[in-house]
Image (tube, rainbow, N blue to C red; front, top):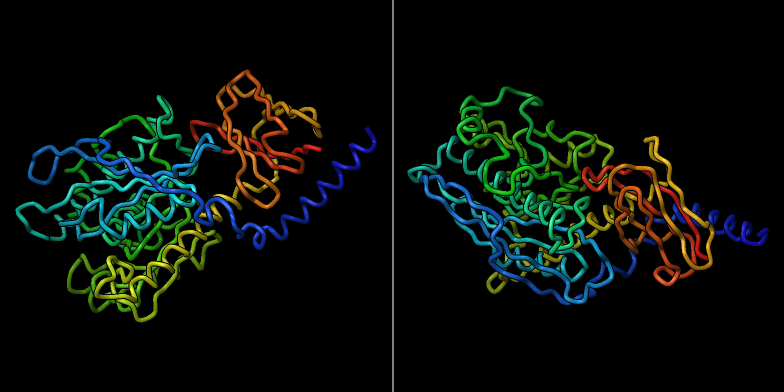
Length: 422
């Protein structure tokens, strides 16, 4: 027993030192960072139905990308992407979106490329109609996120980790994701235009009726690829973190607010990636914004037949997203401070030579997530209320491991801790 305790102490000290080196060690070859899998996609999955600008109903569909050889993890992180096209055109098979979905499904994520409603009333691109098109897009993206929450709570066909759902898009799709995550009527540095308030009323708010009512729309993070936001003060310290890219010479969606241009039309009063980056610099978040000096709008747009440099922009865009997501997947949960809720967690025997049992007095189901000391996600299981779950050494091998227990319905972390297989 004495030797066992000495081993546990030694491994614990080793683990604590590892936390100081996590940033360097976590960014190594492995799941969520390097491409390890073959991507496959399932097309035309119906996720909702909604009314278009002309009063007609339209089915909303998505294409679903997943790693073929993914059989290790019970739950998988999801990225929901929306294409660009100024809210008048575009497809969920846009080459740039397909590229992003394949890149990240090959790294172990699952991705959804979604439809959303396009078009303006009477073809008029007035401020009101553009704003309505944006809100319809937000409503549709929320329906897509609810679709996966619903699946996770029912048949679990797609095996989504609902605590790790990310949303994003290109150009108009980025507008949708930004307004989805950060739009606030009670946090503004200047009064909201009256047309916007009335449009929200006319459309029934940002939740909308595009499908899957009653399920959560909570997301873990945002991917902003050349989008803009109406007010940077919307981004608050407790909001989901974001990553993005933007070109300084973007003539369609300005990287930086221009007061002279904004004096002309309401639609010009927007803050792009350069402004968002300044806002992020004042917040203690894991967010990031990469600025392409001298680049125009969405310089990574594919295909590259006539514009080979776009492949370099795409490579950088992928790396920016990859590093951001990897930090969310590998670093954030490694907080060994105990949760504040008054729940009892029993982890025994600890250390162990074969099996470790987890049990709690919590009245709801909990998600059990286990990480290695290098920050990599290793195992996910569900701990039902008033039940136990057992982890075998064969599933993890020898070493020090960290765990989190999160409420399955709210994704709120209830407890974190550590254990040893020797």
